[in-house]
Each structure stands twice: as C-alpha cells, then as structure tokens.
Figure 1 (cartoon, rainbow, N blue to C red):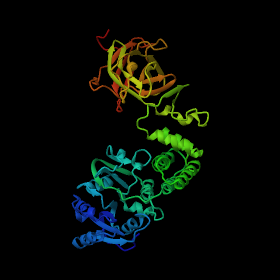
Figure 2: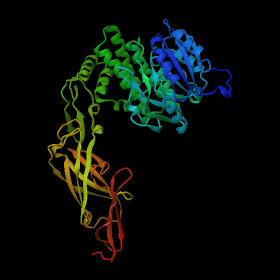
Figure 3: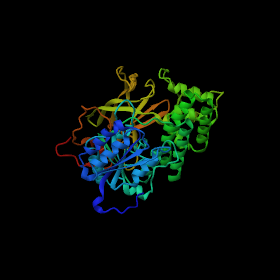
Figure 4: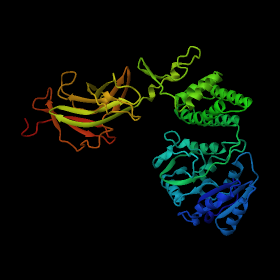
Length: 533
C-alpha cells in the first residue's frame, strides 16, 4: 500500500484504476468514458498502469497524464505472471474513498460512478456491483443484476458468481483486510481479491436497473488445464480458511466446483489434445474432489456435473468422458424420471448401472421439484368458500397427482385438509410447453363443518395447497400467485355458523391477502349484527 501522506484535499470519491496491456486501440475510448462521468472529474482520479505493453499504450497514458495532471496519474510495471502486479501498483496509488478496476477494453456508462458511489454511500456498502453488459459476443455474468439490491451478501444472492474486479470497493475495507492481488498464479488473481472483499464486506449493494460497465473481450488466456484445476483448488481452500463448515461455505464452494473445476474437467475430457496434460489435469481434479469438495457443496451442483465428478473421483475417466459427452449433446432426448417411495430420480447415464456403483442419492432430484400454481377464483356460497385454479409439479405428470387445500391456524398450528376436484384442461402446460392437462382444480371448503363436525374455530387461518404425486409432496401458499383478474377487494365478514357453547353468539370469517400475497381467513366470535338472520 502507498504510505505517502495524503491531505484531506487530495481525497477523491473514487479512483478508477485502468490496466492496459497492448490495447492502445481501445484505451482512448476507455479513458473518454471515465472523463465523461456525470459525477465530475473533481470527484474522481484515474490511475493508469501500463502492464509491459510493446505497442503505443504507454504513450496514450502519458498523453492523458500530461493533458489532465490534476486527476490522471500513470505508471508502468514489467509484465508479470498475471495482471496482479499492475493492479497492485494501481492499488498502492489510490487516494479515493472507493476504487474500481477496469481493463483498457472496458467502458463506463456516463452515470456509472455517480450511481455506484451514491449506492455505496446510501447503503454503507463495502462493495457495489454495477450492472455489466458485453460490448460484443463475449458473455458476461448477468444473473446478479436482475434488480437493485441495497443490502445483500455473497450467501443469499448471486453476487458471488461475479468475481471480476470491475466493482466499486471501499478503500477502507481493502486496507482493513490487507487485500491485494496474488502474484503467484497465472489466472484468477481477480477472483482471490474479489472473493476476499465479499467475505470481508459488511454489506454489498447491486445497481441492477441500468448498465454501468460495458465489458470488452478478455485478454487471451495462456493458462493450462492444470492451472485451471489449481485455481479451483485455491478458491476452495480460501473459502474453507474463512468460513466454518456449513451451508454458507457449501454455497460459495459450489460456485468454484461448477464453474472452474466443471469447465476445466469438461475441456480435459472432450477437447484436450495432449494426453499427458489431460491425465495430469484429471488426476489433479480427482484429488481436489476427494480432498476438498464437501458433500454439501456437491449436492448443490447440477446432477450431470455431480455424476461426472463422482466418476472422476473414482478414477473412472472413460465413464466421465461419456458423461461429459452426454452433457454436451444438445440434441439428446429428454431424461426420464423415476418416482419411488416418495423420491424422484433422474435416470442419467450410470443410474443403477451394476458395472459402475454410484449411490441413488447422486441422482435424487426430489428437492428440485417445483410447483406451478395459480388461484383464479375465490367466492362465497353461504359458509362455503369456493376456489378454482391450477397446481402441478413442473417436472412430473398430472395423471395421478393429488392436491388438497390445507387451512393452518397461525398460532396453534391446528389444520384442516380438504380434497379438491381435478378438472381436465388440455390447454394447460408447464413452462416448457409440456401438457399438464389434469392440473386444474376446484375446491369447496365448508367452514361450517370441519373434520371434527364443528365449525372452523376462531383464529387466523392461512391457506395452502398440498400437491403430491406418487408420494412426492410439496406445499405452497395459496394465493401467492393469482390471476390478474381475481378480485382482491376487502370483503365484509361472512357468517359461517352459530358459535358452539356460546348462546347468542356467531362465528364470522373475513378473507384477506397477506403482505406476501397469501390468502388467509380471520375467524372471530361475535354478537350477530342487527337484522341478520
């Protein structure tokens, strides 16, 4: 870190660190995008670093420093094993409260820094992710930018799936955690740095409603397959050193197992041209899987990847290659599902193969089952609540499915269950267009007579749908998803019955929708209203 004394007047809101490596043709556009920031040049500084370029990159940086000496500073380092040395030099020069790291091929949207700094200040965020967009055909991560998030972290959102350093980092966090880019790895120095920032952050914010950073193509990667496996191992070890065993560690490790190790081993199995390099990478991957991959992290992976990893861990490279080819085959037929004893299994290659012993749990996708449902009508007929809608498992047939409406009292946990009548609708399909013709239902919920023979007692009763198929069961909140035309206007209480054991009193039910959208019924005991029957 830079140890020079910095006066308060020198402190900027944000430092923009730009690394250039033989990218002079793109550098002017990158610099121009920073100079045009709506936050104003009085609130920012540019730190340009030439990473051993042999083209005109250094001259372009020198010209910018000469033209804008008040807020542009530049330096040069010898090209290292990775971009780490250049990024660390820039980091040592930072005088901003926040810093963002760009490549010369990147550009900032005009209001990017204004938006990101405002989010950091308003939310006291240590890291702010600004929405990324590709400048061409190269892909960029997008799943974490679907909405603005003022308060999140690496464990409850998708932010950890973006580990490039084009984020806004609070400089105080970097000092406190002594974070630098590691110089001893040919790839992944940005992952180690950004992961460390996420793990140390008190809060992470996301600016997802507008593009902030337009990403250019990444520099050519000289890493070997073994380098890529080594990166996965390093990241797994980093997470294990920072987090105790449990769901949070499993979630972060699953990202590196799927992305780094998954892609490296698929490449080794399907496209490696050097047999020695291939075998070295696969044996290294097998060691990682046997020694570093926790069962909880493996359980979070797509089942195809988990099966491939299980084969690799056993040293079954030929079978793993067959599995990788199966994954890569975009024209393969749909995989059948087997339902047994309330569990759902995907019948991928090697499922119950007597020659390749793999546990059934590896193919178990019961936890992945999702229910599609919608409440479409809700009306009263005396004390009878009439409901219409649909509910079915996305992944399973509706041929023999069973659905029940469940009323559960919020405080006591008491519940009532009501069967529904299945209605055939040949137009009903799941999200992939597959028929779910018997997924529609109608229900008559008699509040005047429960399973005990008595009316529904006073209390707050939440309504659920219990959907089952051959023992596979899942419960979802009724009303959380409902048809747009469904009338949700507040209703007057409905008399359902005389109050048992309370002469002259009656029970009345008031339906309403909770803040989360679920349908609930408030049952109270009251004196009859004047003029009521």
